[in-house]
Amino acid sequence: MAGQGTQARRRLIRRIAVRSLLALGGIITFCGVVLVVAAWTEDIAIDGDLGKANAEVLDDTFSRTLVRFYTLDGAEYIPQVGVLYPAGLEVGDVVEVEFRKEDPELVRVAGRGAVVTLLPVGLTVLSVWVVLVPAVWVLRRQLRSPDVTPV
Image (cartoon, rainbow, N blue to C red; front, side, top):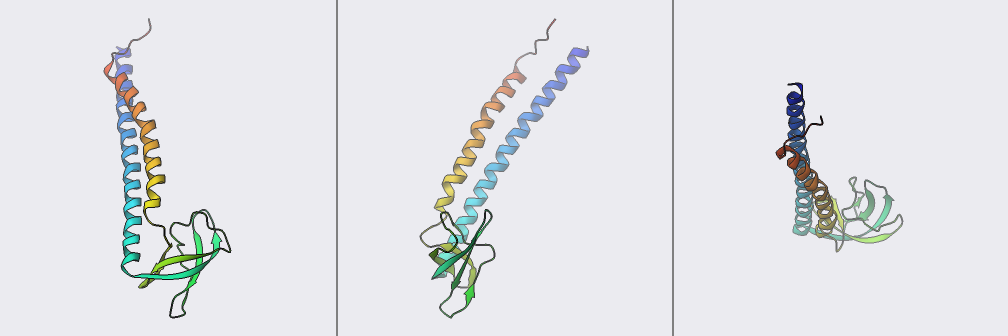
């Protein structure tokens, strides 16, 4: 009798683990899709009201890369969220940027776009599923097979 309770508990734990892993994979996939869509949306906003300028890289940290540029009317901008697609930039570099004239806080490195997000996001999502699918498969297989208890 106690063995049946233990088996039922193990099955419940495996079922919860399967659902949790699938939920985790779904959440990570959803976040990846949202990230790519957000990048594309920002690019569309910039392309719809395009301004260009040369910018100096002021600071380069893990979370953002700050640049300073001047618009045609002479106004100085240092977007607090940083520049989009800053890979390879170093402090002191001068780089061409594209920005939204209506909102110069939205700025990207010229010639770069949302396409550069596809590879890292795609590899991340793929890696997650490469790990999760075998784990879920093993857990589901254990759910289907009868538990053999040692004598």
